[in-house]
Length: 520
Image (cartoon, rainbow, N blue to C red; front, side, top):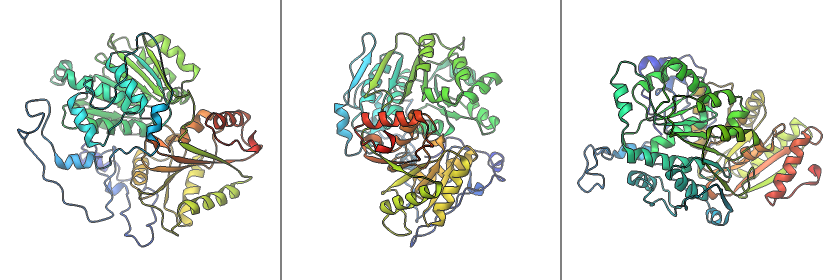
């Protein structure tokens, strides 16, 4: 997706001295892709320059004026179709997997007073016509259970806590009703007045908090996609990038702000963001924010005295630990608790395998054996139509070591971890999504929230130290949107924690998976 941030030459030059991304080995008998480095980085921070592996198709002719046959012809807030932009935004269609219909039988529980009934499809009148139009362009057809219920609940103006399996469509569940409300309400008057003043203080209507830069960028990209042709402006802000670049972007207008907690507090303290007009506040992966030490920032943001008194607050996550209950009691009112399936449970579309190993070299040997069965063509990893593989490790050094080890064994691999700058991380993730580098070795930075289509295999090269919740989030990168997936974990008896062993036994049992004797 194209970035909504147009960097000036001076801003682009700020990355000129950045270290290059680990290179990718070209698959055999194919044209070598262009290597992404800082010299090809042009649009600030949202996305690297597209990598051409073939002759590009001609750019569609842009439609500059509305046609009378356009269903939005008489709506001044909706612009004409831009076929070139449309092709970029919606080139990757949303596809549900072969088990998608099984979602219809999953257990749904709504706790709280007077919950509204669920929607049945994306043509529901609760959704703005433009959003329905864009959802069709994206290939959306049948909503998942969390989407059916959450869209109705949020549209009714209720606060919501939602716990659902990973890959069940939580992002769309909160975005669609919020975007619809924004579209129905029209442009904010206070937003327009402030931007005609000299203060240049951003006064967004919607605030979405995410624990990591990658998840924040992903949510922002979904906002940009589904607000296509509208007046709505989305800005994403996170640490690790010059704050002045982000404040300049905010000064151009911001209706929906997607941010990490630490960077948002910085922006509020600088006077670059004012939360007095926030009507919709979303905490995505709220438990992860607390785990990462953002508890103070989250409580400060939720407790802002100037925030709109009729604010709607939504918490979404695959898990809901006890330490979130205090936040809900303090900052949420008349909320509904939506549970899809079992709380903290693993996705039943994922086959889980635990392999007993005794050393690092043993892990490496098993990894190569596993990849050989999944990539039958020698020295030729799959395209995006085949298997994408995500490998989790505990440390930055091991991530780079395993990526280089796979490169040495003729597998196109890359690594992503907190030691890489945002440019490198975004480029690596983009290459993974496109299948240019179809094996990604990651620390837990990539375990939450990221929705990468076609991930067929997750490998826990190193298991999490203690938390089975982290295990559930890791394996949840596969088996998304009803697709089946495989998660393979290397278990070292005597070296894994007792808490993890007990949690794994419970997780496997509840998911109907085989529990191997060495962890019983």
